[in-house]
Amino acid sequence: MQTSDLIQQLSTQVTPLTRQSLVKRLLLVWMSGVVVALAMLLLSTGVRGDLTAAICTLPFWIKWAYTGSVMVAGTLLTLRFARPEYQSKSLLWWLTLPTSALLLIAIFDLSQAPAEQVHHMWMGHSALMCPWNILAISLPVFVAMMLIMRKFAPTQLRTAGFAAGCLAGASGATVYALLCNESAAPFILAWYSLGMLMPGLLGAALGPKMLRW
Amino acid sequence: MTNSHHPIIRLQCIITFFLTDPIGCNHYPRRYEYLMSESFFIAQLNTEAELRALMVAALQGDGNAHHALLSQIAVKLRTFFGRRLGRDAADVEDLVQEVLIAVHTRRDTYDPSRPLTSWVYAIAHYKLADCFRRNSRREVVSLEDTAELFAPDENEQSSAHQDVGQLLATLPVPQQTAIKLTRIDGLSTAEAAQRCGQSESLIKVNVHRGMKRLMMLYAETE
Image 1 (cartoon, one colour):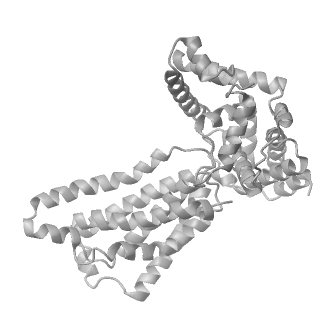
Image 2 (cartoon, one colour):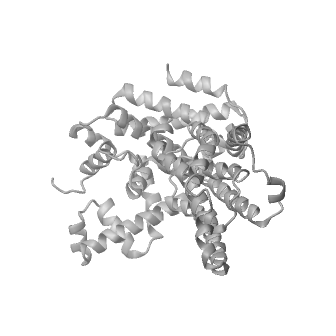
Image 3 (tube, helix red, strand yellow):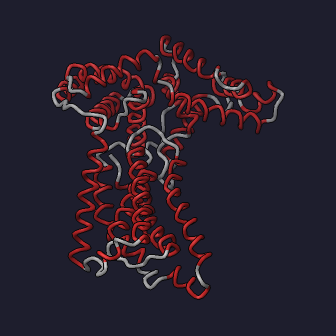
């Protein structure tokens, strides 16, 4: 096809776009991923039995504040790396801000706790399963993110994959918090962080293959 | 000519860098090469203003503006790719069309507060690297053809020098000199070091820092 004909054709397909179009598309797809993840949770194990009571406690909201802020950071980074211009990878350090805050809380809690409780604060009763559960719950969001990023224009594929994966992980962790009844800050710091990192690493590994456009 | 900073050798290094990409994680050139090759593509800053106005209109739904935008971009792309693909006409035109389609379908990834030309360049560059990767062109480009790539195009060359000159002038003097000697005048690091009376590693550090700053400055300019 002649380039001039192509240009002619493309000029007839001009729908108006706003500055927010990119954000809206991303959030829409992200939301559908979260809905699927939530459905997966409800249909398999359901939420924790004491959810209505837990919602009134501080630890629950600390969990959600943590995973929520990683989600926000992940969204901002994903939007950045969805654009083709070069961006510094050091932006990824934004993801560590919520972790640092939680670290301070964990240090404080550990300093206040009696010695025999410390091990339980770190390990809880589901330490080894937790990251894998988060990974599993974040898969629908992960898939949705990978699919929508291909429609954008990422050029730093590994970094974009990592950012999108972390967003998926944080979303999965947020949904998982409805089931998980661990509440110690050190536990959250160690195992939720790991659970959110794993989809990020998966995204970084798959990015160069899955995000090509 | 065994000068390792000869433009032809440098181009081959850039292309080999794309091709021998073992980890597959960086299809983007190192920052300073990015900047220097981009400045030839960008040429004039008033082109940027013109194209951006067209893009803004196109984003609001103006079909004619979009047509004009794509046509103008196509011309620039043809030159850009023509220089890098040795004027293999079929490949160049294919690539131009691919980039135009990408510019059209992914126009929502353009941020109006940033330069349009860098956005288009980033897409063009990505598609070029992809093309090299797909075709695995190990024989790169022959020496006779590469001589054409750096054939002086009077208008583009001089205005590119103007813009680079302006940005360069904002750098600290040691970095300015280092970049001018090694990248523009084409001296080797050893020759530049001798000329300035500094050590080679100092020259390299100045070049690297200067390029980094130039790239940030360029990205920030409206």
